[in-house]
Length: 198
Image 1: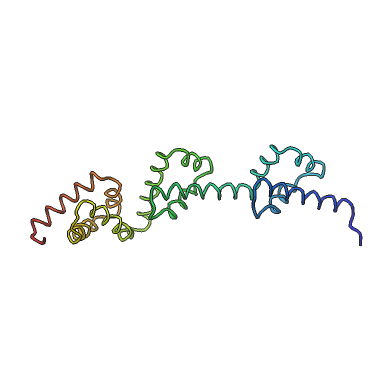
Image 2: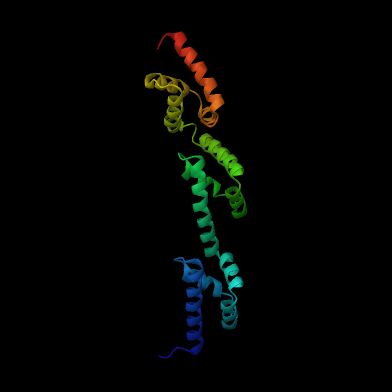
């Protein structure tokens, strides 16, 4: 059975759209994007679109699949940036930040200071949400910081144990602030020395 010429033309145009999407976006979703692009267009409009690369790219980015790919790419960039700030919870914090709109996420990536603040707020919310179950996660990082100040591993371990009695929000602040950590360590060390345990 011969197919009507209109169907063949449409099929060829969709193949051209897919090929052009592939060349511009290099994604496995090219057929989905091409179909989405062509939904409301006539064959002649598709031909015009294929000739205008700037308009073509703009329309790709407006498709649902295009927006998803754009946000996924942005998510990869965000994950890298967040992991440089907090390597322990980078996946969870990135997931939380990805709830923000595209423009806000892009501005956070472009501004390290604002990103650091956003990561800190997200971490505080995460800690509240998990009811402080992150004390164990803080323990290792805290022990490293205490060991830098006290070479005696047994003493560093005892001091870390004392600090881990604090709530998770305070532990997060101590890890982020060397001055606050030093103050708490001095108090814990004095307490330990006065109790005669060392």
